[in-house]
Structures are given as structure tokens and as C-alpha cells.
Length: 350
Ligand SMILES: NC(=O)c1ccc[n+]([C@@H]2O[C@H](COP(=O)([O-])OP(=O)(O)OC[C@H]3O[C@@H](n4cnc5c(N)ncnc54)[C@H](O)[C@@H]3O)[C@@H](O)[C@H]2O)c1
Image (cartoon, rainbow, N blue to C red):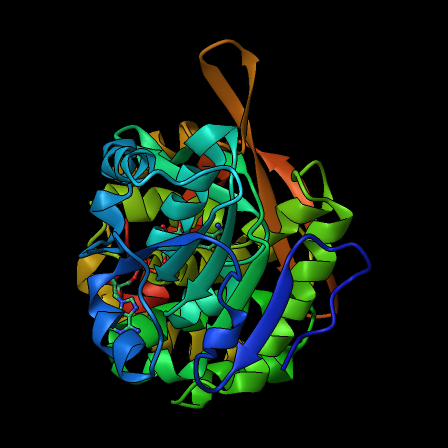
């Protein structure tokens, strides 16, 4: 099914049960894909162009040096300006392939064929492409939206349960942004992903990024859970998966919002969030490890060069859209400690 998107939205969005070769580019194209899905791609009758690149990739490989051999391979083929890059994989692969497409010949078209729950419902759409630096996540990148996104649920059949649960957190984030607590509860309770979840999340994201494609205002809301989440992900040396770190960030954001004077979420909901996060307790970094990463976050502002003083924080509410606040990174210390207490039962030192 082709999803309805705002008029003149740069990406055609499809959510399907199984991949459809008819949605691949009509002209010349190249493929860069995650080796984990090569079998499923072929088994569903999808073609591979000459020079297809399949590689094992996850967050530690989300670096600029990973994509340089792709650019070189495309130039050897050669891929010309009318060619299209088809990216098949999770958010790491689609973020990197999108960036490579932005760089190659100063920009060629690309299609995203996301294969994880997280990339189907979030990362594949919106035009943010990027790579990590040793100093922080997604610190380099470009806005370069795919011409087409094709999310096929069949790919989820091989996705490990931990990755499914990681993707769940970007959906919970979306439910809170939509002030839809019932959907958030369903997302926490229902084990297998439902197609309607992906459709709902993509439709919401398309609306927001269409109004604010380069994150000057409203799009910042999509960073709910990411302010603390990115820092935790990096400080854990990626032992916490992206979605998992966002999950801890979402719970901490609910607690911070309460501290900032907004209405509290029902206790039962906070407990349901904590319950889902409990298995991650052994992977959590300490606050002291996370703080320096927060100070270098993209969303931080600096009053003086080199001294980030405040950070854009997204505070969810049970009874209305989230609010944005500029707060010092240290404002997260106490909510993070309370969050750990809820997850582990231990009293953590802030
Ligand atoms: N651009 C954006 O707007 C945006 C939004 C949210 C997240 N992100 C980025 O997305 C990344 C996380 O993406 P992710 O959660 O998809 O992780 P990922 O890309 O690392 O994929 C997770 C793992 O699953 C494997 N895999 C992928 N598809 C599979 C399948 N169908 N079956 C079996 N294994 C499969 C991969 O090899 C990898 O090991 C982060 O780097 C994050 O920054 C980007």
C-alpha cells in the first residue's frame, strides 16, 4: 500500500507484506545491503544489479571510512548521475547509504528498503543521513531524503527479538509525541509488530518533517528520548542498542517533565516502561560516563565557543503535546538516577 503523504513530500512511502521488484528503479541502479538480509532478498525473487555490495554492518561500522569503498566501487562501474542507490538494511545501513548518495557526484537519488522495525518505522524516512565520529553519534551527515521508501514486513521474520524490542522504543516515542497513551501501552504489551504501527509512525513522521525538514523547530520533538539516549548509547560503547538507549531516555524524559512541573504520567504506565527496560540494567553506563557525551551532543548550544551550556530537551506530557526546554545537561542527573532506581530497584547516586 502506498501511504498518503503531504503534497510535494520528497519520498514515496510504501508499506508492504512482501517486497515488490516493481518498486525498484527503472533505470541504472546499484545496491548496498546488509548481509543479514541477502538470503531473504534473493528468496523473495528480488534482483541484484551488477556490483551489488553486501556487508555485515552495525553501529560500530557507522563511520565515514565504511562508505569510502562504496563510493570507489560506484565510480569504477561507473554509476552516473541518473543512477539510483538502493539501500537494503537497518538504520545504520540506510543512514550511511543515504550519506554516500548525498556525497557521490554531489548527490544521486536513493531508495530506502529498511529491514529492521526501527528503520521501517523511523530511520528510513525524513532525509537525515549520517555517520558517527569517535566523539559522538551522527555528528556528520546531510539532509538527503530518499526518493522512495519501501518497508516490507517479511524482512522482520529473521530479525532477532532483541532488535524487534529495540525498534519498539522509537514507536513508543511516536505514541507519546501523538499523546496516544493507549497506543503506547499496546506497543509495550503486544509481542509481534503490527503493520498499522509502522504506517502510523511513518505517517506522523512525514507530516512533521514536511513542515520542518531541517529541524529548525517542530522536528526537534522527534528527538524525544534521544538527548540522554545518544549519550547512553555512546557511553555504553554501543552495548546498548540505539532503540534501547532511546527507551531509557524516554523514561527519564517522563520523569524530567514531571520535575519541570508538567502533569505526571500514570504510575502504572511508568512501571510498564520500567518493566520493559529491566533486562537492560546490566548494560547501563554510569551518569559520569554519559555526561561528557551529552555535552558534545548536536542538540547542545554553546554560549561561548567550546562550552556547551544548554541542550534542547523534549518533555512528554500525558495530556498534551510535548514541550521543548533548553536545560543544562546536568538537569538529567536526577531523572536518570530515578530511572535506574525504577529499572534496577537500586538507589543510584546522581
Ligand atoms: N535517520 C534517522 O532519522 C534515524 C532515526 C532513528 C535512528 N537512526 C539510526 O538508526 C540506527 C539504528 O538502526 P537499527 O536499529 O535498524 O540497527 P542496525 O542497522 O544496526 O541493525 C541492527 C542489526 O540487525 C541486523 N539486521 C538488519 N535487518 C535484519 C533482518 N531483517 N534480519 C536479521 N538481521 C537484520 C543488522 O545486521 C544489525 O546487526 C542508529 O545508528 C540510529 O542513529 C536514524
